[in-house]
Amino acid sequence: MKKTILCVMCGVTLAACSSKPQTESERQRERQEQADETARKAGRDAYTAAQKAEDAAKELSNDIQHASRAAQQGWDDAKREHEQQKQDH
Image (cartoon, helix red, strand yellow):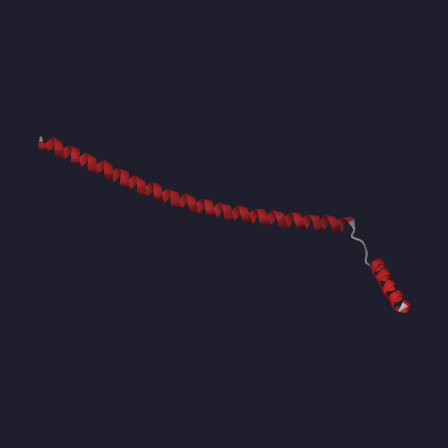
């Protein structure tokens, strides 16, 4: 039992000693990779938002064109009715 515990302790100690600590440049590279991934995600999100805005703008443009045509038709109808009334009198 003592021999097993001693072997485990030696194994843990050896593993702890053999793993080399991260250097400053490795930590900096890791931070930079995380920052890059965050920036890429922000870029993807911005692209998605821009596409949604573009789609909404196109839909709004179509709605405005439809309303414009309807208003022009109403104008033309009123003009025609007015001219018809003038001719009738």
